[in-house]
Length: 257
Image (cartoon, rainbow, N blue to C red):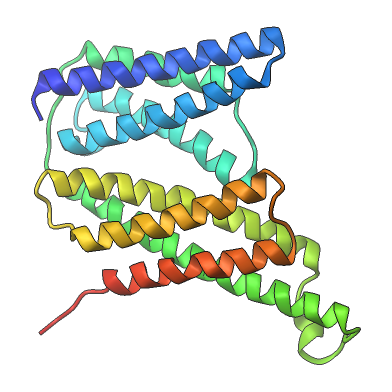
C-alpha cells in the first residue's frame, strides 16, 4: 500500500472517530437515542477501517512513532468494542472517539514505517483460535442451560442436574461468551481478508466459512440484545450458530499429505 493511500485511510478513520464523538455529544445534549446509535456504529466502522489500513501497511506494532499513535487509537477503540459486545458495558463514545481520532491525526503527521505482515498473521490466527474456543465454551454453556431447564421443568434436582449451575448465571454467561466470540472472530476476519488481498497465505474458503459463522453469531447476539431471544430460545439459537462455526473450524485445521 502506498504511503499516500495509508495516510488517507488513517485520516478517514480519524474523521469517523471524531464525527462519532460529535454525534455522541450531540445525542447527550439533545437526549436522542438515534445520535447515540450513530456514534456507536461510527466507532465500529472506524475500527474496521483502521484495522484494515494497519494490516495493509504491515506496521509491526511499535515500529515507529506513527505506529505507536495508531496502535493507541486501535487499542482504545478495540477495547471499547470488546467491553460493549462482551459485557454490555459502553465506554462514552465521545471519549473513545476523541482519543482515537486525535491519536490518528498525530499519526498522519509522522513518518509511517512499513513492516511485514507476519505479526498480523499471528494475531489473525490467535484471534481465530480464541474465537473458536469461546464458541465451544458457549456451546457447552448452552447445553448445560438446556439440561438445567429440562430438569427444572420435570422437577428433577438430583444426580447430574445437581452439578449444573443455576439458569441465571448460565444465561448471562452465554451472552458474554457470544459477544466475545463475535468480537474475536470479527477481528480475525478483518485481518485475514486484508492479508489475503495482499497475497498472504490465507485460504479464501476458510475466510468465507468464518464469515458465515460470524454472521450467524452476530445475528443471534443482535436478537439477544434487542430482547428477541432469551432463555431456551437463546440457548438453542447459540447451538445452531455453532454449526457453521464448527464447519469453519474444521476447514481451518492444517492438512498434510
